[in-house]
Amino acid sequence: MSVIVKGMEMPKNCRTCPMLFDGHSYRWCNITGESLGIEETDNRRNEYCPLIELPPHGRLIDADKFAETLKEVSIRQGYDKLFSDNILSVGDVFDAIVADLKGEGLDEYKLAPTIIEAEGSES
Image (cartoon, rainbow, N blue to C red):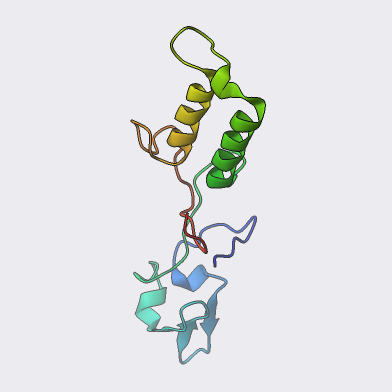
């Protein structure tokens, strides 16, 4: 499971990271438990640093759950029987949206990019 610390800026290096334990004669990362040499903490982040920076984004939702909800609404409302033209039903349109959200559409995840990978489920 992941933890997001709202308002925390990405540290430029291990030395300025709030997760660094500095015992003056030794340093270690409180996240990985890894011992860090003095030179490792000066001007760069350790190559095993688990911190990731979130890109600018809107409201983050569970797209998999949203896709399930859209499918349920489509079935409940009978959209498969409601045609917007003579070719596609509204249900077909919903199915295409659900496929895009799940990364199964023609453009894979390009229309609904992943900000944080799924974890803790089979999704």
